[in-house]
Length: 228
Image 1 (cartoon, rainbow, N blue to C red):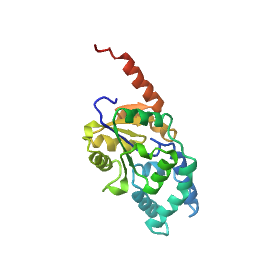
Image 2: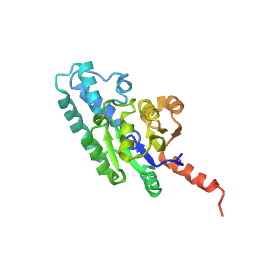
Image 3: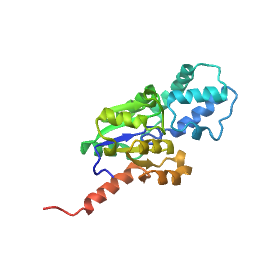
Image 4: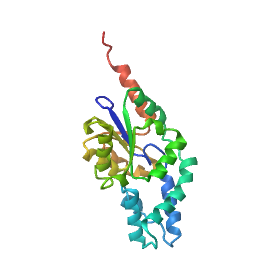
């Protein structure tokens, strides 16, 4: 998977950190304040949207009586403490980041989340120094499944798209990476287990966690014939 690649680009929620549970809880609490239940189709409807696009969707669908910035500010306040204290890295993620850095990879994050929240979780988990660039979907014209965010990250890293490996947990993100001309590895997440077959069919690779990926790479190195 890593051969011929010079950069790895990670989505954040559900891919690098185990946080998708948190967002469902926030949606339920937030909508409950305004007398709404959380619709079953909500997560699929907003999949891949930028933070701003999601706020606009909520405002229109639920006729919310506030401006977009107010909606986003409420979400930031509701999530920031959880990001700092309750959200862990995905299994094996830090060891894999060390492996990539040891191989000289450039690393980036391409997330639909807001920058305040990204900084909070990366800082609390002490992984921010691993990344050469962090880009949010609010910085590009269109969120996932548009390829814009992945193309922006690869451009900033100065690595050609075909030399980039993308890690994603949802179909919209997988599609964004493929549309950018990149190799995509789907990451299993409990929140999207019902989409496993769809993700496997769309992505070039599929992993349960990063420990599995590290084991694969270790076995591949062991199986290669020695060169004298």
